[in-house]
Length: 89
Image (cartoon, rainbow, N blue to C red; front, side, top):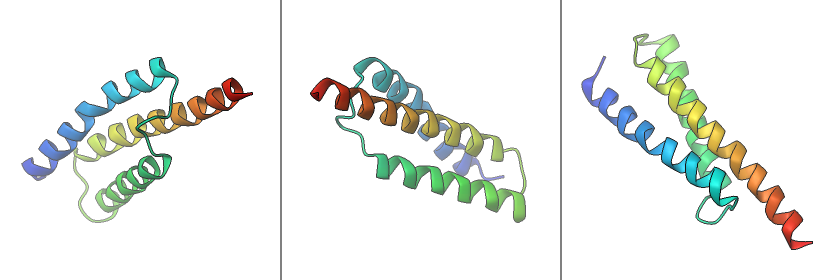
């Protein structure tokens, strides 16, 4: 287990609750990119697969938590895009 990997994932993970809160309350997709969120999800999944196949340790839980948080934010982006479409009509 690398302490630097733990620090990186903890720092990234600390930002997602704020992003989720903002997405939920703003009901807007402004400032967010679904492509970026999907790339992050793929990256976290790759990290999980690496941990499962080559280097299993408890850091895998940080990857899972981060992937869940980004997935929630992506889900909110989809919801907000639908809300924006309804408001435009």
